[in-house]
Length: 68
Image 1 (cartoon, rainbow, N blue to C red):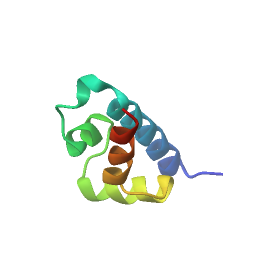
Image 2: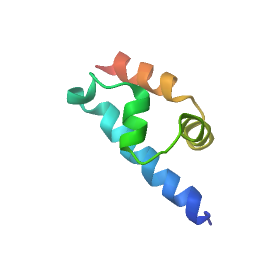
Image 3: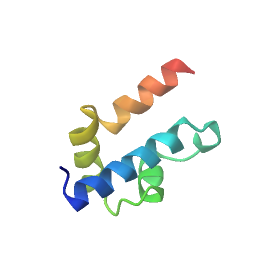
Image 4: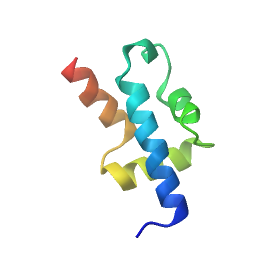
């Protein structure tokens, strides 16, 4: 029931979340990891992440950091 672009962005967000959880990627910015996940702009990444996850990418990263 998703559009093609929503489905694609869901996969990109999943990839971003996996990259953030990998301690080897701590040296990279959120934006660098977003680009690595397939997003082409900061605005598109932030908008789609919040739409699918209900929180901002920064909030997600803070929660991951607290669990480490």
